[in-house]
Image 1 (cartoon, rainbow, N blue to C red):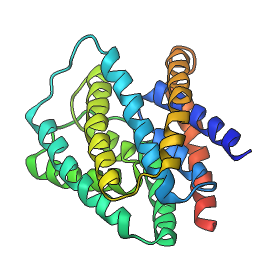
Image 2: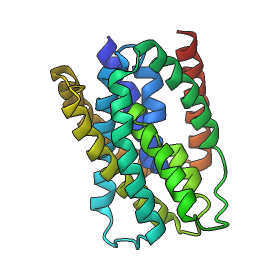
Image 3: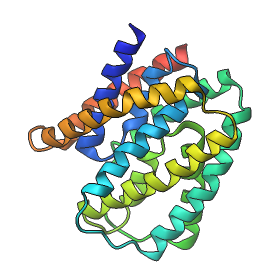
Length: 238
């Protein structure tokens, strides 16, 4: 029964990824954490993020331009992703669960903020944001809303937004998975779950792309975020 519910969560999270381009982790994690140990499911979510982001990169026929500021952001985030993996290895499961509940609520609210496209990011902003986003990637594999908030401030097109997001996820997820492996955080069960969830995630993402032309992005996103907040509150109560 647990696996059945897990499949439904992955499909729903995949739909969000297909519609908005991000948000897989903040949807899937608060639910899956009720059935799996945090340190067992986090590598699985990271692997799923990697697969879904690779699909976006492969589908992009036109490669978008990556500015020096974005490159710096990715570099800093990559470095601090390793730090996040180290923290995950040694943090207590109870503390981790409560931390995740609070962070998911904050990120869910952040993800509702409208894109402004008002300014560029400085080197110092890129460093601070990269460090924070990298830590979130390594610890809980759910840095999407924080990265989206930062990209919202940059004057870029929707196509650039989606491409940068996918490229960022591919690089940091690859580093995180490598770190999980060396930190002995990847078990046989996590590999088995990842292989089981991958085709389901791909299916959900493809359906999400179709829904993107039917259901308004804002409506679908708002519904999923409200559900995530409810799940995160339940996580805190647990």
